[in-house]
Length: 65
Length: 393
Image (cartoon, rainbow over all chains, first blue to last red):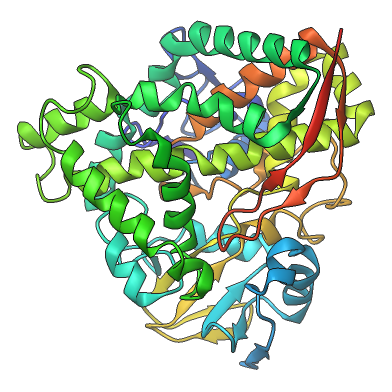
């Protein structure tokens, strides 16, 4: 699975950070940092990343298999 | 293939149904994934998974012809951020939304918190007050119009205009037509405010006027986009803040939990929006034939996506009617909509809500509330009157 961040749509709401804290983090400027490989997503992060993509309120995260 | 058409004579816009909507919503969820509402000639989509899927399929479920129920009134909204489709939508959203992202809002955090602290201090000292006018309205009214840069003149009409604007998104009933004069007044005001120099320099509104000046957006659409700042910035937040007060007043154990662990505040704010969603729902136009769970929705028909029902869908949530500030998945609600049209002001709404709840847990020991009187409104689900007392911590 890979995860794609749409940088135009991302507004920094940070719900992905709560769903997958080991994968996503907002930096001090509120910019989204991806902390681990986005392609492929590490096996132990797959569930959390899928959850983060589902929860993103503005549809800025997309997962593909 | 099962293509049963489910029909219902449920009218979601009687006084009874708008004041107590959860029974009719449950009935619609149980009838099927999409139910033809004879009263409004629209498909009701009431289950969470289907609402979520539609919100994330903007190509099939289009917004460009409006998101209300009356085609005449939908024409008035066309071209606004909410009533547009990508790629045009993405462009205007990025312009309208620029100051509203959590990133951009960071610099306002301290000021908003200070205002929240001041308001709560004032209300603690006051004794009994009205939770709607003195708390839920007073806070955004004292903040948002300044951020947007509106002049003093006209502000006294904002609440009536917002109410009329949202009523116009329902069916063409008495609630909608009663607001026509207000809508005219608002459109005139927005035209006036589109003239460079009318809005406070440097404000969010003035930045939008500048964007029309340098060609980033067209001059024709400017009044409409200024309207995107006016109508939605108040009524929705006000409904949520009054519901929050009512829920925390009627669930003292929940308020105690927040006092013991203020880290729960963001989740509690989501849970307020989930359990008493401020927006009943918006519609979409089907751009092609589409099937939802075996029900075929023809191209050109309209689907009413019922956010407030999805947020209480027993297929999605355990004990959906229970207000639980520790609910693990409260952030999954669709109360702000979701996807490309997810509420552009949600960062500001969260900032306001978190700041006020933060002030409450530090300064108030117990929130006492009387009987809530709910508002008869086509689109907004909120409280009209709520006697309240803050007992000092």
